[in-house]
Length: 260
Image (cartoon, rainbow, N blue to C red; front, side, top):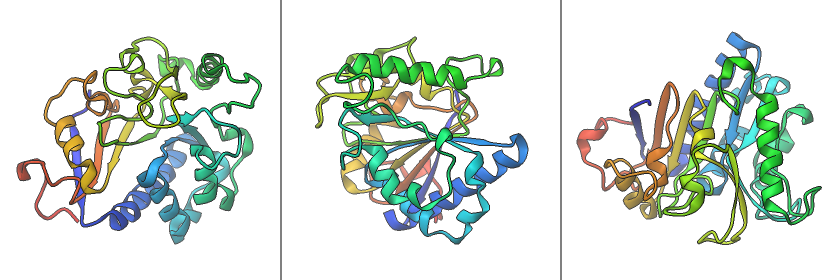
């Protein structure tokens, strides 16, 4: 388990731009050392803000987009193309503007896809896709993602793992169907904490004063059942990327006063 590291930026726009630059560097380095890279995307305002900043970054062309695998941490179980789906929003923010290999883009199933409205079957199918992508060196039922990004909700949820709900208690499966989520839509597909922890690096994104209490709770030693963000960590690095308002309730001793 890696010790969380914090970077606090002046505002959400700077946070998005700096995170995008950091992601470009990480992808390029992974492609240089291993030939390809794998990233797990997150939705929400901070995840989409990062993708939009990446789309606008001149350095984005340093990435070999054809050698990048993209996965998702969770998805709203809605029809393909629904504007509320994370995949749809990611396409609009970045994916349609870069030359990705379609075979290496792995959206979670939609509710009008081959599994119909059976969210459990959709989750099992995505778990099988992860397992096929995991090599024997991964020692896991999921690939060792280079970077897995998560937005942090005001209630400390990450992906679609909400406090006290069954999905956050899962210890074996990599993907689960979520029923009765406390924010709409109620039916979702989500990676579990075991899948999240397979990543080399986990980045948690939070900006805005509505995230300040959640950030403080998650970094105060809370349990992962009550505060799922507290249970999200990478094999080699766990990075919290915050703006000043999201960090407002943290002790200043936790991060350098001169953070950009």
